[in-house]
Length: 280
Image (cartoon, rainbow, N blue to C red; front, side, top):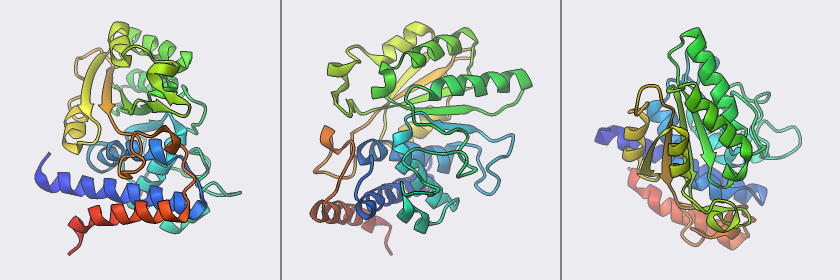
């Protein structure tokens, strides 16, 4: 990744984080923690890697993206705002009756969403179907699935992992937002006491581990998939819950954030200080 592209992607990640924080502050709540932890991944996918035209979101040749952990949708909505798919004013209606941006992504509300997600563990099975369909139709597109580590307590993920390896779905790229926390505690204390990456490797996947906040590492990993022909790829992105809000980082209570006025102002001030690097 050259310096110009790196700077452009980092700016989009910053703006995605700002949209997340402002939406939570304006609405009064939202899943800030997991949305903030995947912002760099989301920015790299949409602004540097995927074959995706926001003006033609149903192009049959486009790469597909599935947000398996649908509660991270504020990061997706932030990316859509930056892409011009939705207007920033739409975020003011977040999770309200009749909104285009509910608490989980709804494919009936925004054309750029390939599948509605919300129930954890469904993204990877859906991704397997898209990837297998592309193989059968001899289509060149890739399918990217962004998953949370907490949702790996769902058995459907492991059935899909086995299926993907058995069918040689090397056009399937799963990205693990590995921040170590879920809504009710640490993953290793709740339901993931062993390495998720090692389990995928045992199922027959190629597995690589990266810094999930380094857009250059994310870009390099994504643009070098498949790692091995005939194998699906898992990218384990090591991330920090609530990245960008220093007072909330690695704190499970900010998985779902109910910001008071003081916290909201502090979070926005921190982001504005970081954002000065792009100001003339």
